[in-house]
Image (cartoon, rainbow over all chains, first blue to last red; front, side, top):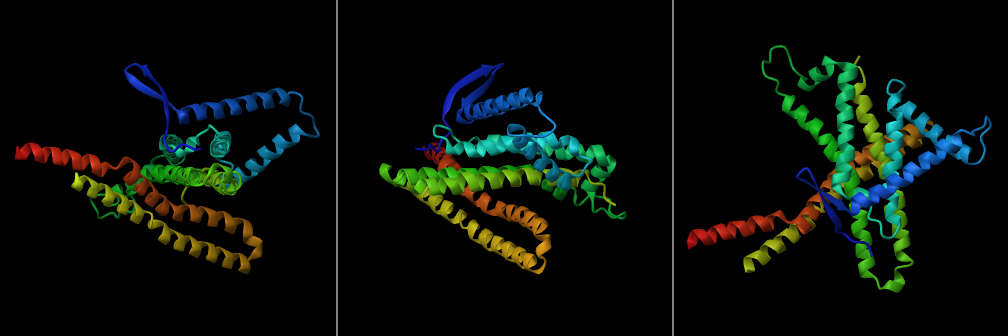
Length: 236
Length: 97
């Protein structure tokens, strides 16, 4: 049985601010722990990496190489220093989406606060990279199109709304897809008697959690890359 | 009490209507997929870049349907109209005596 609601376990009071420890927080911690342990294992094993890869080393190198070549075609050599961030984001969202397959774990990405936090980082990166690579030209583009005879920037509000709409639509896309899967699965589990819930939900799990989860991860990361490299690209 | 029930019923109908944003979204997405398949048939060697662009386009088009889903979820589970109606009814009751 999957719960629709986000359960609250405890409330911490720090400096007069309530911090809620919910399902999402706990699942996020578990996923973070898994990723950190995996990272430490790779770090320890990488001391003994050989010239010719074999077994575990082969798998790790293949994953990193595939992602790196994809990054190179999408954001170019100029922004390659962001590659580790994108890879971390990719692994984190992928594990979050797939965690819906495990019992007792609520998908953390089916919580808007989580996806909005991730999209906010993308938003900050868009602005930062735009200002870093295009300096005043990026700010000037917010006022475009501005003909010389026009005293008031007519298109500034529209451009600003467009900028603010990006993280919102980015976060809602991931959140809506994951929440839709969660709702469908909980409806299915509530609808069927327990002895049927072996067969039918597994096919739906394969669609909603595996297919949709991997696809949405890919889309989130690709759209983030496209936005950031678009902001950093110098217009010719 | 009857009026309160009416508000709930209206919210449920509105939630069902909001999901209809998905119909138009699906039509648009079908258009995108059809065009992409046409392009692949015309230029099979450009398959990789066409499918990448197609998936990004599909994701962009899907936003509309997702907004419909979010609106219907808000109407069903959060129901801001209900709070507003209750406060309005209270204010009206105080005003009338």
